[in-house]
Length: 493
Ligand code: FRU
Image 1 (tube, rainbow, N blue to C red):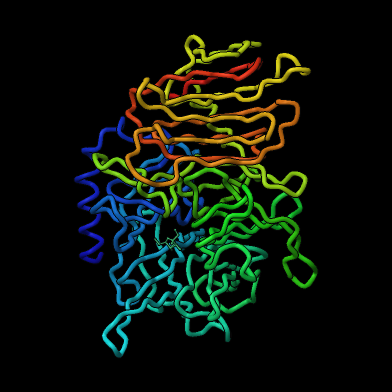
Image 2 (cartoon, helix red, strand yellow; image 1 turned 45 degrees about the horizontal axis):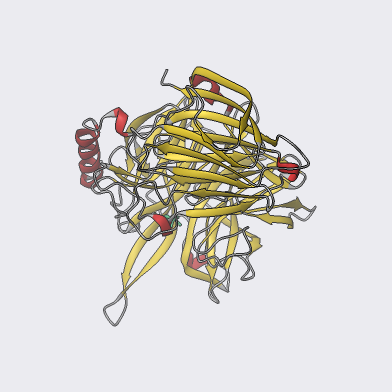
C-alpha cells in the first residue's frame, strides 16, 4: 500500500469515529470525513452493493481526489470501508477522478477511473491530462494496473479534445465490457464516446454515442448509458448550461436523453429533459439490481451551490436517496427505492383535511420522514390558488414547497433555512397538475429534502442545513384545499 493511501486510511479511521451518528443523515451517505462529490463505482460484488465516492478526507473542501468506499445490503444502510484509492502514482497524482466498477469474469472487483496528471508547459504553466485507468481488488484493497493508463487522451480520434476526457461508466453486454466516457471536442462541444474490451484491461475505441451539438451546456460529465423499458437512456451532467424556460437552469445541470438504438447501434434521440428539477443534484450513477430494477444515485449537491454548508460540520457532501427509474410515455420517472419502507416507524394519517389558512396537523412533524400529501380543491368551481408546505420550521428558520395551482408550478425555497450565502435558494418546476390535483411525496433526511411529484414525474432536491431541532411542519392554502396526508417516520433499524 502506498504511503498516501495508508495515511488517508489512518486519518479517516481516526477522525471518522469521532463523528456522532446524529450529525449525519440516516440514509444519505456522507463522506467518512472531509469532502465528497460524485458517487463512483456503484456495483454489486461479493454479496453486497459497493459505492465509492470522490473524496478528500483531510478537509471539507475539494482537494486531490481519493476514492472513498462504503458497502450496503439494501443501498440505504451503509457501512464504511477503508479508502480505496489515493492519487499516488505519476499518472493519477493530480486526482483519481470519477469512474465505474464491475465484477470481472474471474470474480475480481474492477474499478475504472480517470487518472489526472499535471503537465508543465514550456512557459512554466501547467495543464491537466486525463486518461482512463484500472485498479483490481477484492472489495477492500485495490491494486492499480502496471499497464495504466489503459486509454490515453492522446489515442482519441481526430477532433476529440485530449484534456477533457473523463468519468468512464462500465457495463457488460454479451460477454464484452463497455464504457462510456465524457469528452470535450477541440472546438468545445460535449460528446460521449464508447470503448469496448474483452477483459476490462485492454480497450478499443467503439465510436461516438452522442454529440451535444452545443445544445445543453458545454462539457458533458459523468455519462451513463443503459436500456430501460424498451428505450435507451443516456444520463449526463452538463457544465455551463443556459436555462430553457423551467426545464434547464444555469450552470451545472443534469440531462436525460431518451431514445432508441437502431440496427447499426446508433442512438436516436426522442426526448431530452432534466433529471432533477431542484437545486442540488449532479453526477448520477445507476445499477441494475438482481430483480431487474434500475437504481440511480447522484451527488445531492451542485458545484454552483457548494456555499450551502455548515462550517461546523466535519463532512461536506451527501448522496441522494437511491431512486428506482422507469420510462413512461417517453419520460423519465423516479421514485424512492422501495426498501425505504423497511425503515418505516410510526405512521400518521390525516384524511380529507380542509386547509384554508396556516395550520399544523397533530403529530405531523420531523426531520426524518417519508410524507405523501394528496392535494385537491374543495370546490372545483372555486379552486384554491396556492398551497404551501413549510418544513424544518422552528419559527425562525424554515423551508417551503409551494404549489401554484393556476400556473401549475411547484417552487422549492430554502431562503429562510439559515443559509447566509448569496447562492440559489429557490427553484421552480412546471408540472402536470390540472384541476389543482397533485401528489407531493417528500423525503426528509435531516439535511436534505427530496420532493417526488406525481409519482415521480418530476423530482426536486435540495440540501438544508437548518438546526436539527427545527422539526415543525405546517400547511397553508390561499383558497380552500383538501388534503390527505400520510407520514411515515423513518427510523434506524
Ligand atoms: C463531476 C466531476 C467529474 C470529475 C470529478 C472530479 O462532478 O467534475 O467530471 O471526475 O467531478 O472530482
